[in-house]
Length: 193
Image 1: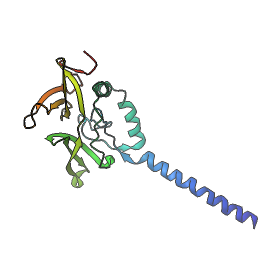
Image 2 (image 1 turned 90 degrees about the horizontal axis):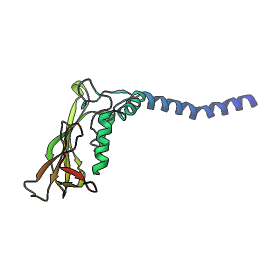
Image 3 (image 1 turned 90 degrees about the vertical axis):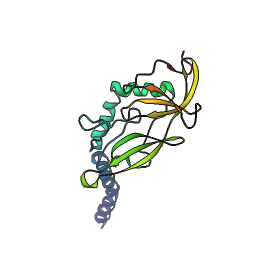
Image 4 (image 1 turned 45 degrees about the vertical axis):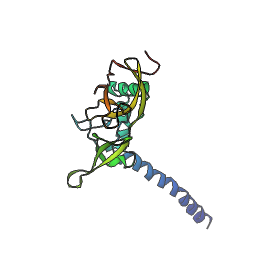
């Protein structure tokens, strides 16, 4: 009788370990993709198309995030964001990013947001919708004069400063970075001259 009770209790004790093992296997091997919030490129992307996600088992996606974090492009965009005080862009915040295949900035703007075209699914199950994403508001120096405005991102990766103080109907647009994170030589962060 004692052996049966001990075997039963040991069997119950292994249930949580089995559930944890199943959960861990699911977390390691489910297929997913990850969008870099600095350079807006998928860490693993289809060949020649950095704006289209490549879905991999999670363990490979995590490894691609580590590799992507050491690329010159990512480091340049991260440095640009930190130096100018530009917030990270996350167009996937209200959609489960593991289902997205593309996230493309459009030229549609509202008061404090830029519209992104989000696409998900493959083949006949492909779908898309447009979602507003908050723009970063920064202050900088333009030819030594204080300037402030919203940061707008373009599909080619470039950014521009949208100065709304100029005119609400016709805001002034100043190139901030080109597609390779090279800053406009006329613009400097506050505190650097």
